[in-house]
Structures are given as C-alpha cells and as structure tokens.
Image 1 (tube, rainbow, N blue to C red):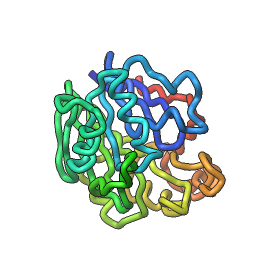
Image 2: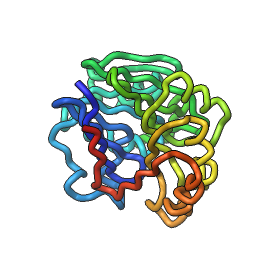
Image 3: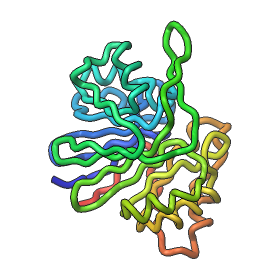
Image 4: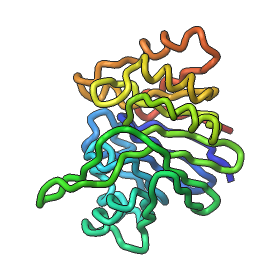
Length: 235
C-alpha cells in the first residue's frame, strides 16, 4: 500500500489516505476554528499520531479515539496520560524519539523537535514528554511532519537519513518557526515539496504562505499551499 492522499484539516491537523486506512497527525478538529465542518467528525480513523500534548494538537484525541476505535501513537508520557483519560490500553502505541514502529505496512518514526509539551486535564496541566516530529514511510516515499519546532541544525540529518519527499512545516512564527526559518528547514531537508501548516489559525500566528513561498522562490522546492479541506493527491 502507498500513501495516496494528504488532506489538510487546518492548523497542524493532517490526514493521510493509506490504502483503505485513514491516518492522522495531530487531529485537532472540534475546537479548530479553521477546520471545515465536514472534517470535524470522521467516521473512520484508524491511526492517530501525536507530535506533542498541547491542546491545539492533542486536545481532540480522546474523543476521536473513542468514537473511531483508533490506535494512538505518542511519546510514552503522553500515551500514559491518554490512557488515564480513557483511551484503551490495547489501542496505545507508546514510542519515543529515535524509535520506529510498523503499523499495517506503514512505518512510523519519531524525530527530534525543539518545543514544549504538556497536556491539560480537569485536574491540572501535566508534563507530556518531549515534543517530536513524525516521519511516515510506506516503502515508496517518506513524508515528514515537523510538529511544532524551531529551526535546528540537525534537521539536515533528518533529511539525509529519511530523505523525505514531502515536508510539512510550521510557518506561523511566535510558537514555531516563521517563514524564513521554515524555508531554511526546507532547504536543509532537501525535500521536493513542502506544505506549510500552523499559520493563519489565530491572529497571533503572523507568518504567511506568501512570505514562505517568497523565501523559497529561488530554490527548486515546490511549495504546496493547501487551504483547510484541500488535498494533495499523490497517485
């Protein structure tokens, strides 16, 4: 099987069609102000992968996992928190950075990222392990979702090791890379195509796709700008 389609649900939420299975990274949907209504309540969601525990990435996961019977891959600390919040133990896939797991023919790897990570519960905010990036590999191509991160020089090593065909990078600034930093990351990764995310959701996220495209205009990297609800068909 191959990853056939990427669907952007707004903010950092991204769906992947993998054969007849649906995979999502950071599916914050219900409270996401830019997520289209038709994507907020998926009826099929086989695997959820989380980059970190912040509410705008992981805040909808317990609801979705219960409704869809999804498996959930996350760092160990975050997985344990989700278990305590009601995700069945047999559905949890605890991982950590540097590790990979196989799931129904898909390879899921967690990479480094530089960001904080916590999870809000009714009893307070909990430490949720370290933030990470995710690489999905179907045996034909690798796709890298950077999660929330600043630019860091070892992102070049991620590019050299995984050789991602497509990178999904945050560009909103303030909490993550801005357009210039993200463009530097895309160049360091040496990817063919890059999809900007984590921008335009809130006014404080000031980075724009236009700035990002301008930063990469003289480089042989295709910037694929997807509006929430739009998709990229990979064939």
